[in-house]
Amino acid sequence: MSTTMTLAQTQQELVSEFAMFSDWQDRYEHLIELGKDLPLIAPENKTDDNLVRGCQSRVWLNAQLKNDLVHFTADSDAMITKGIVALLVRVFNDRTPEEIIGASTDFIDTIGLRAHLSPNRANGLSAMIDQMKRYAVAFSGNASTA
Amino acid sequence: MKTKDAPVTKAYDVERIRAQFPILRELVHGKPLVYFDNAATSQKPRRVIKAESAYYATINANVHRGVHTLSTKATEAQEAAREIVRRHINAQHAHEVIFTGGTTASLNLASFSLGQLVLKPGDEVLISGMEHHSNIVPWQLACERHGAKLKVIPITESGEWDLTQVPFSDETRVLAVSHVSNMLGTINPVKELIAEAKKRGIITAVDGAQAIAHLNVDVQDLGCDLYAFSGHKAYGPTGTGVLYGREELLERMPPWQGGGEMIDTVTFEKTTYAKLPFKFEAGTPNIAGIIGLGEAIRWMEDYDFAFAKASAEQGKSAFAAHEHMLLERATKELLTIDGLRIIGTAKEKVGVISFVIEGVHHYDLGTLLDQQGIAVRTGHHCTQPLMERFGVSGTTRASFTCFNTTEEVDTMVTATQKAVKMLR
Ligand SMILES: Cc1ncc(COP(=O)(O)O)c(C=O)c1O
Image 1 (cartoon, rainbow over the protein chains, first blue to last red):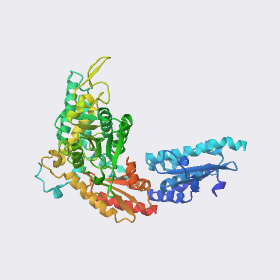
Image 2 (tube, rainbow over the protein chains, first blue to last red):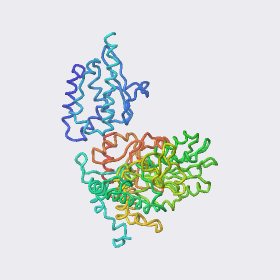
Image 3 (cartoon, protein in one colour):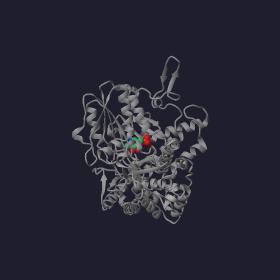
Image 4 (cartoon, rainbow over the protein chains, first blue to last red):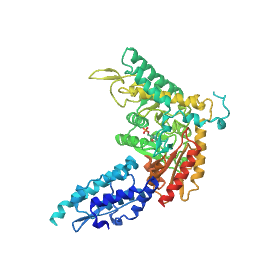
């Protein structure tokens, strides 16, 4: 389904999903569930180079350009962190580099997630977004010449 | 001694203690705060907060500098705090108490200055395998500067020093070890090890960061040359700390930082230094904080009679007894959780419990406990070599204090069970 949705629509979808939950437990259970759908990074790509700096638990993130779209894979040793990456991947996966570079990330605040993250995790979250955007920037030159 | 109350077990009035801490009225995610991160920093009783703000409101002035009234009052208040610290740790002289920014600053001062004084190529500094990074890195730096080597006392499975394998040698110049481990809670036999070091003519430094709020620290009884601690871990303000040093050694140690306050006379050719303790206190000190630290110690002594007297009478600390009761309850209850392992099972422990749970990452657990209003510490606790020793990447640590209750321990155990269910 989500492949037919625009980036903004996916963000909206996530906002609605999280709006259904009134208490922290349901919200976190949902986040943990999301983590289970994360496109996992290949074991050989779980290298120190692919570790996202600024996260307190370990997060690996990799990206490849396929048919001019950025395809992300990731993993984490902590489940909540994995859920957070999964949420970002759901929004940014298989988009053009330009879409990713131009995307706003306000939806994270709308979901109310940032308020529930410790500063450490919030830094980790920003680090993940930065890393995804950096991949997009790196690919943006390649895509047009390919 | 305050013996008008019934025996400690009956008389310990936790509500009376709780009433002293304004922060305990705060809600976290809508739930009453359960503060189990006391080893990271302790909360402050109202008296300490008041003492610090009263300084600013009524006597704020720079110390040791002016002839005017406020400066005199500020100086007197700061020096009164020095005397309170002296008495509390039973130092011989007030000028053996150097005010610093904290344990880390104290240990940097100690390692820099001692390095200059005694370390030569081939010499050794002996630490233990359970040290906080603050008691590792400064010595490593000193060793690098002087071509010396760092040696390490191994740690047993229960989280104690392996006293059969202490690598003392003829080259050992300094022994620098912690009184109490922040990760394991182990109370180390520092007095015995210091005695052994003394026989070999080794200078001894103790990291007392985790001891000062729980044990009756008596530097003369311990026999150490140097003793470091932080005010903020003993109900005092952040940015305060102490390095105690034996007079004779401090006299020989060169200054660490230069600046105002620490000089006698300055010419461009040569500077002579102020006498103790000012030789080691360059710049304007944290006057408000130091006054707060003095008040924190007086507060401890008022509420815990064991702290009120020097070790001549070895009174059992009421705080420590209460914290030990909480530790035993937490240990027993947490162990009912499937796959839970406690790291640090020494016989002598303060109220610190570190654990790992199979299949559960400590960050996940810490986050889910926080959602339930419970503050614990997760991660490597600035003891990475110790984590490696136990083959874990981090632990969850609950550390108890005088105001925690058995109900809070039960709340944590229930919350942990709930989190584990969510994460498995
Ligand atoms: C055993 C130990 N040593 C040193 C320190 C450093 O103390 P500070 O950060 O107050 O300088 C700590 C604080 O966590 C500690 O637990």
